[in-house]
Image (cartoon, rainbow, N blue to C red):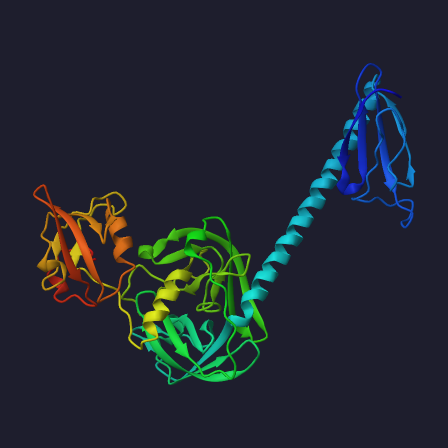
Length: 416
Protein backbone atom coordinates (compact mmCIF):
# COMPACT_ATOMS: atom_id res chain seq x y z
CA UNK A 1 0.00 0.00 0.00
CA UNK A 2 1.69 3.17 -1.19
CA UNK A 3 -1.16 5.61 -0.71
CA UNK A 4 -0.69 8.36 1.91
CA UNK A 5 -2.43 7.62 5.19
CA UNK A 6 -3.53 9.64 8.20
CA UNK A 7 -4.46 8.54 11.72
CA UNK A 8 -7.22 9.28 14.22
CA UNK A 9 -6.46 8.01 17.75
CA UNK A 10 -9.02 7.17 20.42
CA UNK A 11 -6.22 6.74 22.88
CA UNK A 12 -8.27 6.60 26.07
CA UNK A 13 -9.39 3.03 25.34
CA UNK A 14 -6.63 1.89 23.05
CA UNK A 15 -8.41 1.89 19.69
CA UNK A 16 -7.05 3.66 16.62
CA UNK A 17 -8.86 4.12 13.33
CA UNK A 18 -6.76 4.78 10.26
CA UNK A 19 -8.04 5.84 6.90
CA UNK A 20 -6.32 6.20 3.59
CA UNK A 21 -7.11 8.71 0.92
CA UNK A 22 -7.71 8.07 -2.74
CA UNK A 23 -9.73 5.66 -4.86
CA UNK A 24 -10.26 2.24 -3.31
CA UNK A 25 -8.86 3.40 0.03
CA UNK A 26 -8.88 1.15 3.09
CA UNK A 27 -9.52 1.62 6.80
CA UNK A 28 -7.45 -0.25 9.38
CA UNK A 29 -8.93 -0.73 12.83
CA UNK A 30 -6.37 -1.95 15.34
CA UNK A 31 -6.20 -2.83 19.01
CA UNK A 32 -2.75 -2.86 20.55
CA UNK A 33 -1.43 -4.97 23.39
CA UNK A 34 1.64 -4.97 25.61
CA UNK A 35 3.54 -8.10 26.58
CA UNK A 36 3.04 -7.46 30.28
CA UNK A 37 -0.77 -7.56 30.04
CA UNK A 38 -3.31 -10.28 29.21
CA UNK A 39 -4.10 -10.54 25.51
CA UNK A 40 -7.65 -9.29 26.13
CA UNK A 41 -6.51 -6.03 27.70
CA UNK A 42 -6.58 -2.56 26.16
CA UNK A 43 -4.32 0.36 27.06
CA UNK A 44 -5.02 4.07 26.93
CA UNK A 45 -1.41 5.05 26.33
CA UNK A 46 -0.49 2.51 23.68
CA UNK A 47 -0.35 3.79 20.11
CA UNK A 48 -0.64 1.75 16.93
CA UNK A 49 0.76 3.50 13.89
CA UNK A 50 0.90 2.56 10.24
CA UNK A 51 3.47 4.57 8.40
CA UNK A 52 2.81 5.91 4.90
CA UNK A 53 3.62 3.19 2.41
CA UNK A 54 3.76 0.38 4.95
CA UNK A 55 1.89 -1.65 7.55
CA UNK A 56 4.46 -1.80 10.35
CA UNK A 57 3.23 -0.97 13.87
CA UNK A 58 5.20 1.20 16.30
CA UNK A 59 8.00 -0.46 18.26
CA UNK A 60 5.97 -0.38 21.50
CA UNK A 61 3.33 -2.62 19.96
CA UNK A 62 3.83 -6.36 20.22
CA UNK A 63 0.73 -7.47 18.34
CA UNK A 64 -1.60 -5.62 16.01
CA UNK A 65 -4.57 -7.31 14.47
CA UNK A 66 -5.60 -5.64 11.24
CA UNK A 67 -9.04 -5.84 9.78
CA UNK A 68 -9.45 -4.74 6.18
CA UNK A 69 -12.77 -3.15 5.45
CA UNK A 70 -13.91 -2.02 2.07
CA UNK A 71 -15.37 1.47 1.92
CA UNK A 72 -17.53 0.36 -0.94
CA UNK A 73 -19.75 -1.62 1.39
CA UNK A 74 -22.58 0.38 3.01
CA UNK A 75 -22.96 -2.31 5.64
CA UNK A 76 -19.33 -1.91 6.60
CA UNK A 77 -19.75 1.82 6.93
CA UNK A 78 -22.79 1.30 9.16
CA UNK A 79 -21.02 -1.07 11.56
CA UNK A 80 -17.97 1.15 11.60
CA UNK A 81 -20.19 4.08 12.63
CA UNK A 82 -21.82 1.98 15.36
CA UNK A 83 -18.42 0.91 16.66
CA UNK A 84 -17.19 4.50 16.64
CA UNK A 85 -20.30 5.70 18.53
CA UNK A 86 -19.84 3.03 21.20
CA UNK A 87 -16.23 4.00 21.60
CA UNK A 88 -17.21 7.65 21.99
CA UNK A 89 -19.69 6.78 24.75
CA UNK A 90 -17.03 4.87 26.64
CA UNK A 91 -14.57 7.71 26.09
CA UNK A 92 -17.01 10.32 27.47
CA UNK A 93 -17.82 8.17 30.49
CA UNK A 94 -14.15 7.63 31.26
CA UNK A 95 -13.45 11.35 30.89
CA UNK A 96 -16.35 12.22 33.22
CA UNK A 97 -15.15 9.81 35.89
CA UNK A 98 -11.64 11.20 35.57
CA UNK A 99 -12.87 14.80 35.96
CA UNK A 100 -14.85 13.96 39.10
CA UNK A 101 -11.82 12.26 40.61
CA UNK A 102 -9.59 15.24 39.85
CA UNK A 103 -12.12 17.66 41.34
CA UNK A 104 -12.35 15.60 44.51
CA UNK A 105 -8.56 15.49 44.76
CA UNK A 106 -8.31 19.27 44.26
CA UNK A 107 -10.94 19.97 46.93
CA UNK A 108 -9.20 17.72 49.43
CA UNK A 109 -5.82 19.31 48.72
CA UNK A 110 -7.30 22.79 49.22
CA UNK A 111 -8.81 21.82 52.58
CA UNK A 112 -5.55 20.18 53.69
CA UNK A 113 -3.66 23.41 52.99
CA UNK A 114 -5.89 25.63 55.12
CA UNK A 115 -6.94 23.11 57.80
CA UNK A 116 -3.97 23.70 60.17
CA UNK A 117 -5.12 27.34 60.51
CA UNK A 118 -8.77 26.51 61.28
CA UNK A 119 -9.60 26.21 64.99
CA UNK A 120 -12.53 25.08 67.12
CA UNK A 121 -13.96 27.59 69.61
CA UNK A 122 -16.07 26.80 72.66
CA UNK A 123 -17.86 29.41 74.76
CA UNK A 124 -19.00 28.98 78.35
CA UNK A 125 -21.66 30.95 80.21
CA UNK A 126 -23.23 34.23 79.16
CA UNK A 127 -26.80 35.11 78.25
CA UNK A 128 -29.09 32.68 76.45
CA UNK A 129 -31.34 35.24 74.74
CA UNK A 130 -30.85 38.22 72.46
CA UNK A 131 -34.05 40.20 72.81
CA UNK A 132 -36.78 37.68 71.98
CA UNK A 133 -34.40 35.39 70.13
CA UNK A 134 -33.20 32.27 71.91
CA UNK A 135 -29.48 31.90 71.29
CA UNK A 136 -28.07 28.53 70.35
CA UNK A 137 -25.12 26.93 72.06
CA UNK A 138 -22.27 24.87 70.73
CA UNK A 139 -18.80 25.21 69.27
CA UNK A 140 -17.97 27.53 66.41
CA UNK A 141 -14.96 27.98 64.13
CA UNK A 142 -12.13 30.47 63.83
CA UNK A 143 -9.20 31.30 61.57
CA UNK A 144 -5.64 32.10 62.64
CA UNK A 145 -4.63 35.54 61.33
CA UNK A 146 -1.40 36.03 63.26
CA UNK A 147 1.22 33.48 64.26
CA UNK A 148 1.42 35.08 67.73
CA UNK A 149 -2.11 33.95 68.58
CA UNK A 150 -4.65 36.26 66.95
CA UNK A 151 -7.76 34.45 65.71
CA UNK A 152 -10.72 35.90 63.85
CA UNK A 153 -14.22 34.44 64.12
CA UNK A 154 -17.86 35.30 63.54
CA UNK A 155 -19.64 37.52 66.08
CA UNK A 156 -22.56 35.09 65.82
CA UNK A 157 -20.93 32.75 68.31
CA UNK A 158 -20.33 35.54 70.82
CA UNK A 159 -23.70 37.28 70.87
CA UNK A 160 -24.32 35.70 74.28
CA UNK A 161 -21.28 37.51 75.71
CA UNK A 162 -19.73 34.35 77.16
CA UNK A 163 -17.91 34.29 80.48
CA UNK A 164 -15.01 32.26 79.11
CA UNK A 165 -13.66 31.15 75.74
CA UNK A 166 -11.61 28.07 74.87
CA UNK A 167 -9.78 27.60 71.58
CA UNK A 168 -8.79 24.15 70.37
CA UNK A 169 -6.08 24.10 67.71
CA UNK A 170 -5.88 21.66 64.82
CA UNK A 171 -3.39 19.52 66.77
CA UNK A 172 -5.81 19.22 69.69
CA UNK A 173 -4.10 21.76 71.97
CA UNK A 174 -6.59 23.76 74.06
CA UNK A 175 -5.94 27.36 75.09
CA UNK A 176 -8.01 29.97 76.93
CA UNK A 177 -8.78 33.03 74.84
CA UNK A 178 -9.85 36.58 75.44
CA UNK A 179 -12.02 38.70 73.19
CA UNK A 180 -9.93 41.64 71.95
CA UNK A 181 -12.59 43.59 70.02
CA UNK A 182 -15.65 43.25 67.80
CA UNK A 183 -16.45 44.59 64.34
CA UNK A 184 -20.18 45.24 64.58
CA UNK A 185 -20.49 46.13 60.92
CA UNK A 186 -18.94 42.99 59.41
CA UNK A 187 -19.89 40.78 62.37
CA UNK A 188 -16.35 39.69 63.19
CA UNK A 189 -14.56 39.22 66.48
CA UNK A 190 -10.84 39.09 67.21
CA UNK A 191 -9.58 36.65 69.84
CA UNK A 192 -6.14 36.27 71.42
CA UNK A 193 -4.51 33.17 72.80
CA UNK A 194 -0.97 32.56 74.08
CA UNK A 195 0.37 29.68 71.95
CA UNK A 196 3.35 27.55 72.88
CA UNK A 197 4.70 27.79 69.31
CA UNK A 198 3.96 30.09 66.37
CA UNK A 199 0.63 29.20 64.80
CA UNK A 200 0.34 28.12 61.14
CA UNK A 201 -0.81 30.96 58.93
CA UNK A 202 -3.16 30.56 55.95
CA UNK A 203 -2.46 32.06 52.56
CA UNK A 204 -4.84 34.88 51.63
CA UNK A 205 -6.16 35.35 48.09
CA UNK A 206 -6.18 38.96 46.82
CA UNK A 207 -9.72 40.27 46.43
CA UNK A 208 -8.94 41.27 42.85
CA UNK A 209 -8.58 37.59 41.92
CA UNK A 210 -12.05 36.58 43.12
CA UNK A 211 -14.37 35.71 40.22
CA UNK A 212 -18.07 34.91 40.06
CA UNK A 213 -18.43 31.24 39.17
CA UNK A 214 -15.16 30.02 40.65
CA UNK A 215 -15.11 27.12 43.10
CA UNK A 216 -15.55 28.08 46.76
CA UNK A 217 -15.05 25.75 49.73
CA UNK A 218 -16.41 26.50 53.19
CA UNK A 219 -14.26 25.06 55.99
CA UNK A 220 -15.13 24.82 59.68
CA UNK A 221 -14.00 22.82 62.70
CA UNK A 222 -16.99 22.10 64.93
CA UNK A 223 -17.94 18.42 64.70
CA UNK A 224 -14.58 16.69 65.07
CA UNK A 225 -11.35 18.34 66.14
CA UNK A 226 -9.11 16.14 64.01
CA UNK A 227 -11.12 16.63 60.82
CA UNK A 228 -12.62 19.85 59.44
CA UNK A 229 -16.17 19.99 58.13
CA UNK A 230 -16.42 21.03 54.50
CA UNK A 231 -19.03 22.39 52.08
CA UNK A 232 -18.47 23.07 48.38
CA UNK A 233 -20.07 25.60 46.04
CA UNK A 234 -19.15 28.59 43.92
CA UNK A 235 -18.73 32.32 44.32
CA UNK A 236 -22.16 33.53 43.23
CA UNK A 237 -21.72 37.31 43.63
CA UNK A 238 -19.24 39.96 44.77
CA UNK A 239 -19.79 43.23 46.64
CA UNK A 240 -22.99 42.12 48.37
CA UNK A 241 -24.52 43.50 51.61
CA UNK A 242 -23.44 47.08 51.10
CA UNK A 243 -20.18 46.08 49.41
CA UNK A 244 -19.06 44.15 52.50
CA UNK A 245 -19.37 40.53 51.39
CA UNK A 246 -18.70 37.76 48.92
CA UNK A 247 -21.82 35.68 48.27
CA UNK A 248 -21.54 31.91 47.90
CA UNK A 249 -23.86 28.94 47.54
CA UNK A 250 -21.52 26.75 49.59
CA UNK A 251 -23.52 25.80 52.68
CA UNK A 252 -22.92 28.36 55.45
CA UNK A 253 -24.21 27.75 58.98
CA UNK A 254 -23.05 27.79 62.61
CA UNK A 255 -21.03 24.71 61.66
CA UNK A 256 -18.57 26.88 59.73
CA UNK A 257 -19.29 30.49 60.74
CA UNK A 258 -15.94 32.07 61.55
CA UNK A 259 -14.13 29.61 59.32
CA UNK A 260 -12.61 30.42 55.93
CA UNK A 261 -14.11 30.34 52.46
CA UNK A 262 -11.22 29.13 50.27
CA UNK A 263 -10.47 28.63 46.58
CA UNK A 264 -9.26 25.38 45.00
CA UNK A 265 -5.68 26.36 45.82
CA UNK A 266 -6.49 26.52 49.53
CA UNK A 267 -6.19 30.31 49.67
CA UNK A 268 -8.61 32.23 51.88
CA UNK A 269 -11.21 34.19 49.92
CA UNK A 270 -12.95 35.41 53.07
CA UNK A 271 -14.33 34.55 56.52
CA UNK A 272 -17.87 33.13 56.71
CA UNK A 273 -20.37 35.23 58.67
CA UNK A 274 -24.20 35.55 58.76
CA UNK A 275 -24.28 39.11 57.42
CA UNK A 276 -27.48 41.08 57.09
CA UNK A 277 -28.43 44.33 55.33
CA UNK A 278 -29.57 45.53 58.75
CA UNK A 279 -26.27 46.46 60.39
CA UNK A 280 -28.00 46.92 63.76
CA UNK A 281 -28.56 43.17 64.11
CA UNK A 282 -25.99 42.18 66.69
CA UNK A 283 -25.37 38.61 65.54
CA UNK A 284 -26.34 38.88 61.91
CA UNK A 285 -29.20 37.25 60.09
CA UNK A 286 -29.81 33.54 60.55
CA UNK A 287 -33.01 32.88 58.59
CA UNK A 288 -30.99 32.17 55.44
CA UNK A 289 -29.90 28.74 56.68
CA UNK A 290 -30.04 26.12 53.91
CA UNK A 291 -31.21 28.63 51.31
CA UNK A 292 -28.12 28.53 49.12
CA UNK A 293 -27.08 32.01 50.25
CA UNK A 294 -24.00 32.48 52.40
CA UNK A 295 -21.66 35.42 52.94
CA UNK A 296 -17.98 35.88 53.66
CA UNK A 297 -16.04 39.02 54.54
CA UNK A 298 -13.37 39.35 51.80
CA UNK A 299 -9.78 38.51 52.74
CA UNK A 300 -8.42 42.02 52.12
CA UNK A 301 -11.11 43.48 54.39
CA UNK A 302 -10.26 40.94 57.09
CA UNK A 303 -6.62 42.09 57.04
CA UNK A 304 -7.62 45.74 57.34
CA UNK A 305 -10.15 45.03 60.08
CA UNK A 306 -7.69 42.97 62.15
CA UNK A 307 -5.18 45.84 62.05
CA UNK A 308 -7.80 48.07 63.72
CA UNK A 309 -9.35 45.52 66.06
CA UNK A 310 -6.00 44.56 67.58
CA UNK A 311 -5.95 48.04 69.14
CA UNK A 312 -8.76 46.85 71.40
CA UNK A 313 -11.56 49.13 70.19
CA UNK A 314 -14.84 47.93 68.73
CA UNK A 315 -15.74 49.05 65.21
CA UNK A 316 -19.19 50.33 64.27
CA UNK A 317 -20.79 50.97 60.91
CA UNK A 318 -20.33 54.57 59.78
CA UNK A 319 -23.51 56.63 59.61
CA UNK A 320 -23.89 59.68 57.41
CA UNK A 321 -27.51 60.40 58.35
CA UNK A 322 -29.29 60.87 55.02
CA UNK A 323 -32.41 59.36 53.52
CA UNK A 324 -33.60 58.97 49.95
CA UNK A 325 -36.99 58.61 48.35
CA UNK A 326 -38.91 55.37 48.02
CA UNK A 327 -37.71 54.59 44.51
CA UNK A 328 -35.83 51.40 43.69
CA UNK A 329 -32.22 51.86 44.94
CA UNK A 330 -30.80 50.05 41.91
CA UNK A 331 -32.12 52.73 39.57
CA UNK A 332 -32.75 55.82 41.72
CA UNK A 333 -30.34 58.76 41.65
CA UNK A 334 -28.69 59.65 45.00
CA UNK A 335 -30.73 62.78 45.64
CA UNK A 336 -31.09 63.58 49.35
CA UNK A 337 -34.69 63.44 50.59
CA UNK A 338 -33.99 64.20 54.26
CA UNK A 339 -31.18 64.60 56.77
CA UNK A 340 -31.24 63.36 60.36
CA UNK A 341 -31.10 66.18 62.89
CA UNK A 342 -27.66 66.53 64.47
CA UNK A 343 -26.20 63.94 62.08
CA UNK A 344 -22.93 64.36 60.15
CA UNK A 345 -24.94 65.09 56.98
CA UNK A 346 -27.12 67.75 58.61
CA UNK A 347 -24.16 70.12 58.88
CA UNK A 348 -23.40 69.91 55.15
CA UNK A 349 -26.22 68.53 52.99
CA UNK A 350 -29.76 69.68 52.29
CA UNK A 351 -32.80 67.97 50.75
CA UNK A 352 -32.46 68.14 46.97
CA UNK A 353 -28.66 67.84 46.94
CA UNK A 354 -27.42 65.20 44.50
CA UNK A 355 -24.39 63.28 45.76
CA UNK A 356 -21.91 62.59 42.96
CA UNK A 357 -18.89 61.03 44.73
CA UNK A 358 -17.53 59.78 48.05
CA UNK A 359 -13.76 60.12 48.49
CA UNK A 360 -13.44 60.49 44.74
CA UNK A 361 -15.46 57.34 43.97
CA UNK A 362 -18.22 58.32 41.55
CA UNK A 363 -21.77 57.28 42.45
CA UNK A 364 -24.65 57.51 40.01
CA UNK A 365 -27.29 55.43 41.82
CA UNK A 366 -28.38 54.99 45.41
CA UNK A 367 -27.12 51.40 45.51
CA UNK A 368 -23.64 52.55 44.48
CA UNK A 369 -23.60 55.11 47.29
CA UNK A 370 -24.72 52.46 49.78
CA UNK A 371 -21.92 50.14 48.66
CA UNK A 372 -19.31 52.84 49.25
CA UNK A 373 -20.68 53.93 52.64
CA UNK A 374 -21.30 50.33 53.72
CA UNK A 375 -17.56 49.64 53.83
CA UNK A 376 -16.77 52.57 56.13
CA UNK A 377 -16.70 52.85 59.91
CA UNK A 378 -17.73 55.37 62.52
CA UNK A 379 -14.92 57.88 62.93
CA UNK A 380 -13.85 57.72 59.28
CA UNK A 381 -13.46 61.13 57.70
CA UNK A 382 -14.83 61.28 54.14
CA UNK A 383 -15.09 63.85 51.37
CA UNK A 384 -18.55 64.23 49.85
CA UNK A 385 -18.96 65.72 46.37
CA UNK A 386 -22.47 66.95 45.57
CA UNK A 387 -24.45 69.22 43.27
CA UNK A 388 -26.69 72.01 44.55
CA UNK A 389 -28.50 74.46 42.32
CA UNK A 390 -26.40 73.38 39.36
CA UNK A 391 -23.08 73.98 41.13
CA UNK A 392 -20.55 71.43 42.33
CA UNK A 393 -19.54 71.42 46.01
CA UNK A 394 -17.27 69.39 48.29
CA UNK A 395 -17.32 68.96 52.05
CA UNK A 396 -15.66 66.75 54.65
CA UNK A 397 -17.62 64.96 57.35
CA UNK A 398 -16.85 62.39 60.07
CA UNK A 399 -19.18 59.39 60.12
CA UNK A 400 -21.04 58.63 63.34
CA UNK A 401 -21.77 55.35 65.12
CA UNK A 402 -25.32 56.35 66.05
CA UNK A 403 -27.90 58.80 64.76
CA UNK A 404 -29.97 60.79 67.27
CA UNK A 405 -33.64 61.61 66.77
CA UNK A 406 -34.18 58.99 64.09
CA UNK A 407 -37.98 59.23 64.49
CA UNK A 408 -37.98 62.74 63.01
CA UNK A 409 -36.94 61.45 59.58
CA UNK A 410 -39.46 61.32 56.75
CA UNK A 411 -41.65 58.23 57.42
CA UNK A 412 -40.91 55.01 55.49
CA UNK A 413 -37.58 56.30 54.22
CA UNK A 414 -34.60 54.22 55.30
CA UNK A 415 -31.58 56.13 56.68
CA UNK A 416 -28.00 55.76 55.43
